Amino acid sequence: MDSWIAEVPGTLSGSKIEDLALIGTKCKQCGRVYFPARKNCPRCLDDHFTEQVSLNRQGVLQAFSIASMAPPGYAVPHAQGYIDLCENGPRIFSLLTDYGDESRLKGGCRMEVKFVELGKDAQDRVIVGYRFRPL
Amino acid sequence: MRDAYVLGVSMTRFGKLLDKTLKDFAYETVWNVIHESKIDPHDIGIAFVGNAYAGVITGQESVRGQVVLRDVGLSRIPIINVENACASSSTAFYLARNAVASGQCDLALAVGMEKLFCGDIGKSLAALSTSSDIELEGRMGILFAGIYSMRVRAHMEKYGLTRQQFARVAVKNHDNGALNPHAQYRNRVTVEEVLNSRMIADPITLLMTCPMGDGGAAALIGTKEMAERMGKRPVKIAASTLGSFGFTGKDEPGIVARVSKQAYQEAGITPQDVQVAEVHDAVAPVELFLYEELGFCGPGESGRMIDEGITWRDGKLPVNPSGGLSAKGHPAGATGLAQVAEIVWQMREEAGERQIRSLPHVGLVENGGGNVAGETAVVGVHILTA
Image (tube, rainbow over all chains, first blue to last red):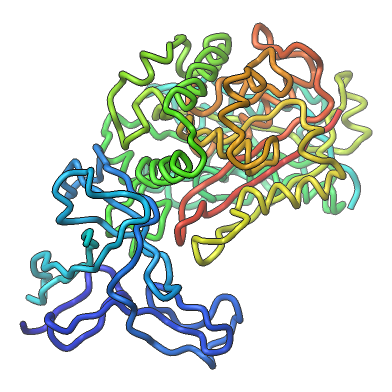
């Protein structure tokens, strides 16, 4: 794939779509990890100890909802959820995908990130978003 | 800090009021509170004007306060525009209280108003969706009903709260709203009707959500002497606190617990001292979490409170006797001050048919707005005593 741009800024990195990863920021002083990536640590209020890190591809579904209404441009019904990434990672809000019917979604179930191409922007870059699917 | 008192309070009827403007809401409520407070309007030292969405809905993005107060007839004094989403007028109240308590002035005006209904639901939803980080969560299509639904479902799994209990909150609030001439919804509903109404985001149904509407509310804040001169029961602002989101979305305690704890400390009371409350039931099930976060009961015990009738109008701790957001309506920028107005009316025995059984000495207001980083962006908690 040629040039791409993340649907949500500060969420993805990688040279090709095949090796994309979710990214965040880790503070080496307090150990906290934030998503999306950011300039400083809001707990330490310091930017000396922060580094960009790749996040775990898997997480645990903390809560989810099937939305029967959505802003213009979003299909209904669709599922959205909060996922706590593995290894004590941050909590992420995400649209959910590939779940078949709702019964596959349960609080506590294991999820994995999936990157999706969402069209092109005005500069002909592929817009890439992240979704989570049940394992 | 000296004590500050609520003088007059006012709100318009809430509803879909296409023939009314923000100026109409400000004119009606500000002059109502001036007359009720028995003060000289020339003595108003500062004004805080709350509004959330006029920039999107009408295009009046800037100097909204000056524009509406021009119509009211107030000029020259400092006019501060306050935007904090659905907690805008709670924030105006907080600032007006601080202006008097700090001695900056003796008489401060807080007014809030909103025109959310414009005949174009897409435009109204677009305006509401600006109450999150539009670059981050906004691009993922996050909606308040979805956020609330996730919290409700997590709570159901953890504590076994039921759909019937959520529906009962909506039934209670509609029952109160039916007696409130200011309310947008004046009809009673049954548990079955609530559960069978259109699904918005499971388990939240249409009759559990607040309607889209318009309206205004205002309060004058003054000194103890002014309150005593009014000839009505003086209502003291024992605490007014405001707080913002935490970063991880996993913080314990959550924002409402954090901000209300600070309010209880400031007022020198415990949650068990509260005798009436107006809380931010943007969707009815959330009212139950608020019982827990405000400390009215322990974690997971809120379902029992609604089942046993404790928070009904004739119960031990009536919650949302006005009908709450879900029945009275929720014109965002007016909501916080309308909640304050209801508590003051209850304390002065001016609540008409919906007056609670025993005259309260301690009342609480909780008002939330927006969503940032997975938590409510801003929460205001106010404690009034008489």
